Image 1 (tube, helix red, strand yellow):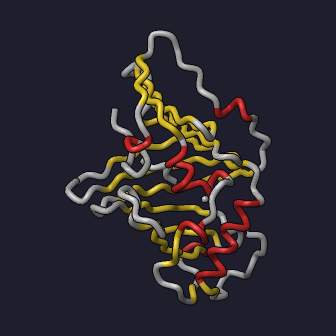
Image 2 (tube, one colour):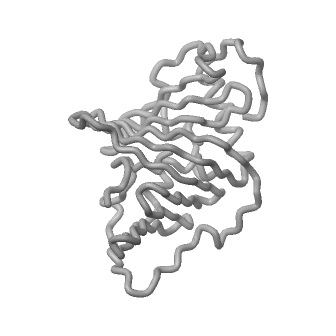
Length: 221
């Protein structure tokens, strides 16, 4: 799963840019974004799997490490208030509770608490030309070794610098691909939207940070 799956200046489509400049524009854009919501389609493509697993739903991010993934398929929710992360699977009547620290460290820039330039380095620092549909492709590797993330690949809108697709590749070559559509920003999402109240009769499973779901693809039911 990915938690999974996001500059100030707009440059004309067709103009090549240095990859470091694109990375800075992405970071600037998300630093100036208070909250973000989008529809998503997510695929987990395993090295030994013939058929990719797919899910879809709505995702929301807010500064200070808050996020919420409402999955339609499969039916589940992944919610973080910046301190605690809950993975709720209603059909199983289970909720997994994790510390949010590792998730924030890996992907905090999406929720306003990380820095791509600090936490990652460019795989191929070079001049980029816009790809199909007016997007740049930026590839990054973490500065510190991490078992769940060996590489990130972003497809970035060349006008807005919002991320429209992110591939998370783990050390075994498995890929979690998240595509974001219908992106809306600064909608004034309240902090309470990123809280989770555990329903009665649901089994609560508390897990250490080393068992975080981040980077393992779509959570299994």
